[in-house]
Image 1 (cartoon, rainbow, N blue to C red):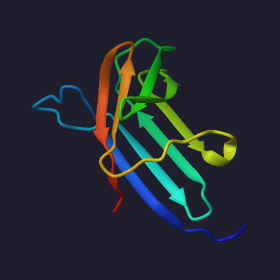
Image 2 (image 1 turned 180 degrees about the horizontal axis):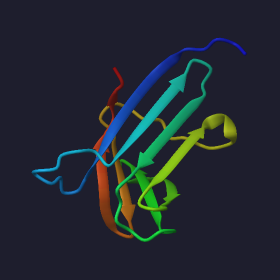
Image 3 (image 1 turned 90 degrees about the vertical axis):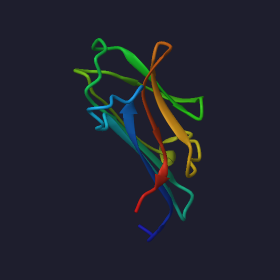
Image 4 (image 1 turned 180 degrees about the vertical axis):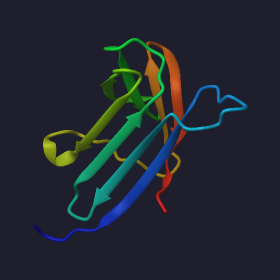
Length: 115
């Protein structure tokens, strides 16, 4: 396996919409990495969602559909790599990611460089 380096890495904490004034803790996180060989990785983890098991939540980047995830026991996880014949949208600093259930925004966050 050839050595490769990360050329771009961004992460976003996802918060309830609207953000509660007392409990400002994330209910999800998303991470994007791009490598020198062109491969891209996208991960998202969600928790504490109060929607029925088996429901599908839509992940959108800058209001453009990306993926859907299935909710089980209030949680969901998606881990994708572009080398798996999956198209992964390029993520930039300041891009907004939202999680929708039906037409309601459940969670929202903004990508920032991962320090």
